[in-house]
Amino acid sequence: MSEAAARLREAEREHQQARQAVEERGRDGLEQVADAYGEATKLLDNYVDTATGSGDFQAYVEFQERFATLVEDLPEDVAHRDAFETALDRTDKRRLSESDFQATREALEPAEEAAELLEAEREAREAYREAEKAAKRRLGTVKDRIAECERLQELGEADLDAPVEDLRGPIETYDEAVVEAFQDYRLDASAREVLAFAADAAEYPLVAVREPPTELVEFVESHEAGTETIPRLLELADYSRSKLEHYVDDPVELTRAVSTRQTYLDRLDGSGLRLGWPPGPAEQLRRRCEERISLVSRFASEDVVATLRTVRELTWREDYDRLRTAAVALTDLGEEERERLASGAVADELADLREEKAELQDVLGIAE
Image 1 (tube, rainbow, N blue to C red):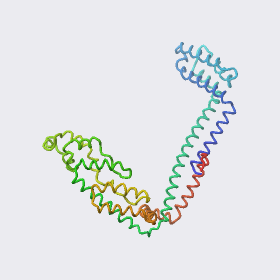
Image 2: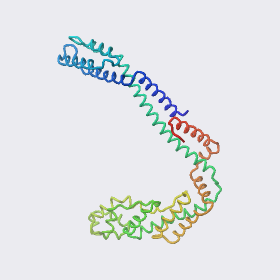
Image 3: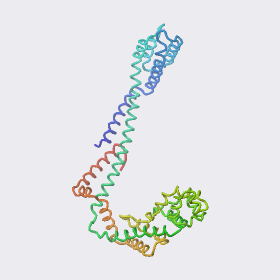
Image 4: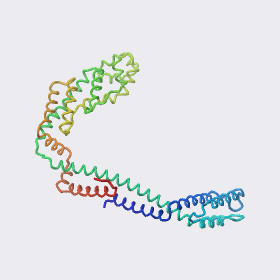
């Protein structure tokens, strides 16, 4: 049995034993004794320094009165009432010493043992809850690892001789071309136009272009400097205030809007329009292509768009899944993974994980 499952099983057993011990003695009665014992020890702790010897007479009187009231108010049938009465007798003296306080504590030991049963149950219950949480965390980890091993096995079955270049060639050609085309776009188009494009691209869920900052958009739309290119805006933002006054009407606004957004502008480089390698499932790649076609056609040549359409058409190939699985396998499977697959280590680990999963689900009472 796995460590987490065994720990939970043991914690459950200890909790049941502790709870049974309390139920056998009577929970209500034990709680009465525990409350009274707690109050008694609190009084002993609070007054041991002030009510002993020739100390504070008022503290001595208060302690005796409060301790007597505590004992007298106990129900007649409360468990270990005799222990509290014996303890009270130990305090019935004209002068109290530390040894009297110690003797009073010793007289309360039967009540202490009763209170400890409740504390033991509380600790066992807490230990069970912690073990249960740990088992649930472990179950989540095991499920994740099972998924990873199953994926490794699936990749291990890939046809590594499949003509993966039929996919790789068009995708890599497009990825390189679209970034190059966007770089030219940044050099030629106004910042106002490029940021408008970025705002539109950000609306597409499968395009990794962030929405431009609002203050930056407002600046380029409302100032003449917005007709400059992004590289030129970044260059101007590096000028000193006095030098910048010769080029723009509102140098303060330009500095505030552009300088603080330099990271965003630097990262707006067209990389978010790439498809990436290896490709995803056919339907996903098809949608990624379709989203990009309308965007890329706004700044790139027809050759770039045509390559993108070629990639989209590849998703309709009957052997697309075979090619994609091979592409993922060639990309993701390192030498170590291939050796573990070949030796059967992955299969052995998967079997162990599935067994542990079943054990954890059983001890947690979770159905498959």
